[in-house]
Length: 153
Image (cartoon, rainbow, N blue to C red):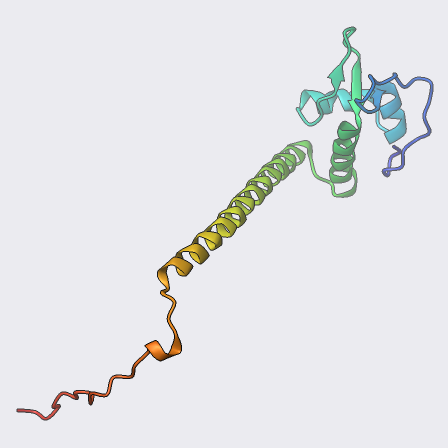
């Protein structure tokens, strides 16, 4: 991808990805595509902002997820003027928010499941608690209602 999120055309410098694992890009290709110096990418890695995988020969390989992360970093630093300490805080907060959102989604699924199960239980309890009766079985009470005397003594 280029400096503003546009991916550069594929080159022969790109390593072949293992089958079924997506594409990987070497540091030179990523640096050129995004208009950053390779040392900048190494700095982002030292700061813990990027975590490219490594080959057996210790060559950095950047995945599609790494490129998305780099785009966020570059947007924060270039477009919004955030320093690297701020970028780290923002990325950590995003990870926490994503984790919390997953937890809320899991909790909502659990609640929905329990409600569905509970409604079935309530319906079953209601059916067993009610005694079927015919309309003629009901008899009105003909006795007059007793009203207490409310006069002061």
